[in-house]
Length: 340
Image (tube, rainbow, N blue to C red):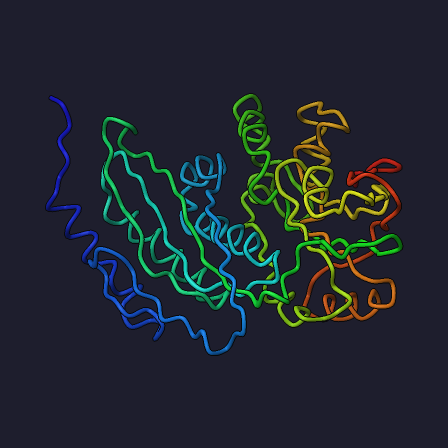
């Protein structure tokens, strides 16, 4: 018999989601069930406010997370990635909308998803204002889920950080990642399919599976006090494509970023992935962040202050390169030193 959408179950599930949104943030003016979300914007705080918008999903990591009942973890992955992208322009994250596509509505799982997204937003000072939960039995098999989310942030026009003022002599600071974050999981999942015992292989003080399920690190709380600092001229979130295909997105056309790969402090999980998959150095560099989840470009006289602040916030921040004359590309010198 063909599966039919259970409208009553869907309505009961959605009705219960209000406890994670209603009355949680005074800026959210509607309740769950409204056709759209209302968010009070304090425009008086700004002279020329600019909205920053982004949509994100956690990639194939979500398949691994659901397989191992890490529902909350992958929601933090998604929201943290989303917030990182938003704040790369110097923005304050304001409001998030989530999307949950289900093969079949599972009230418990959907509730856990929304609760985790709401909590991840709260940690970063933004609000989950609502979203969409939809049952699509002809699109997904029962037990399958696809997550997505969108964010709106705000930044003063004169305070936008877009790399336009990067110049020769500037310094590139790397901030450590918590692991693969949300990139490279097609490769990782293939490794686990071909080598199931890899899941339990020791990686430092944990296991391979635990290391690859470590949530995507969010950098906003450490960065926000640096916004407005005249020495901060560029921010790049290092995701799929690695440092070469993300740092170049903020470079003016008359400079290059020269990055010393030997300076990277690489978590041991990447060495295990490289060895298990016999992955080339170049492919590792293109697929993963290799320990640098964020790159900051700053003036030379601001480096010490940036490092002191970031490390005091619990980040592992260190110099990985500098800006030289060029054509808007990233030049990598030396090779990554994988931990044994």
